[in-house]
Image 1 (cartoon, rainbow, N blue to C red):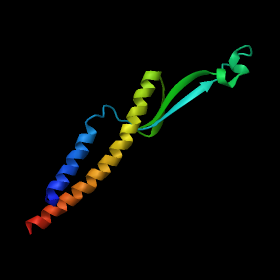
Image 2 (cartoon, helix red, strand yellow; image 1 turned 30 degrees about the vertical axis):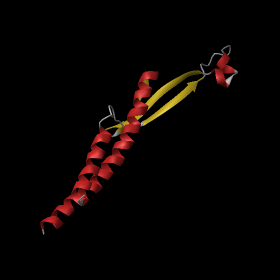
Image 3 (cartoon, one colour; image 1 turned 135 degrees about the vertical axis):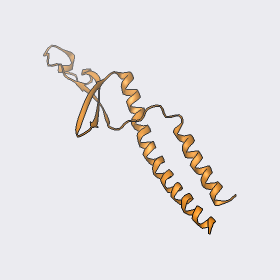
Image 4 (cartoon, rainbow, N blue to C red; image 1 turned 120 degrees about the horizontal axis):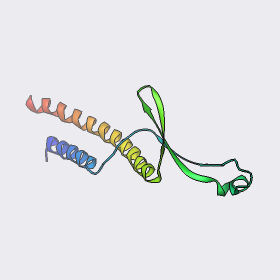
Length: 111
């Protein structure tokens, strides 16, 4: 198998790795519990009885950081989307390296 066809196979594998990704986003997801402030509530004396969990997604929008309160379902989607974003960055860096090798190999094969 030639270098060119090996590179094409590796690039095709990178492209296939992108297919199952539905959402991709950056940011951080926080899970918090809170005290309500009522002295007669269980949360005032028992840390395990705090209210929540509450999910907050923080991400950059232009020049500022934006916070969103999410439902449990939205938090699951955002968690997966953040992982996808990280995977995408790694795949794109690898694709860049493979493409560079393939493009430079074209020049050598034409000589």
